[in-house]
Length: 190
Image (cartoon, rainbow, N blue to C red):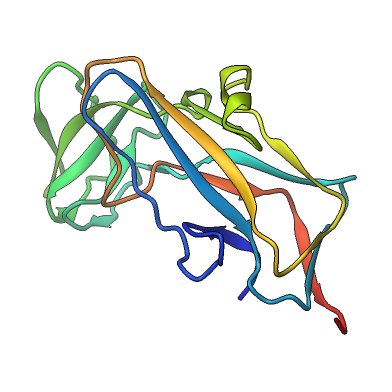
């Protein structure tokens, strides 16, 4: 297994955390970054250290594309809202005028509903300690060091904030994630 996020300190359960946030407030989560293979070493390809940061995973609307039920997208020019496919089909060649004030609309034969405001990368704070979340800056990454040896889990504390009353749910398609800068994994004789 490569270096990745896990839900446990023994690094046996890969994290596939989806955010469902049905109210205003904060959601705190702890995940564990590492590799359960003690002979693996992670190094940055060009940077001075390994950085873990929030990233945008929302797919942009595309013309003449087939969308399945549950797919989540945003307009090609983001308007701050996300839309979920509620009727599978193919979109038109021309992008629709996106709505935010009514529940659903159509693009070609595909039907979409507005889910509410999109999670922003600034809604996600990460830290190497629980207490550090209070002073962490939303959307910024954390340094994990110049090299990481497998076999040791690094706790990563994450706080997701929902400042709107909108239901914010990316369960079917992830909207935000955590990723490292460009890295390389090698193996050593341990």
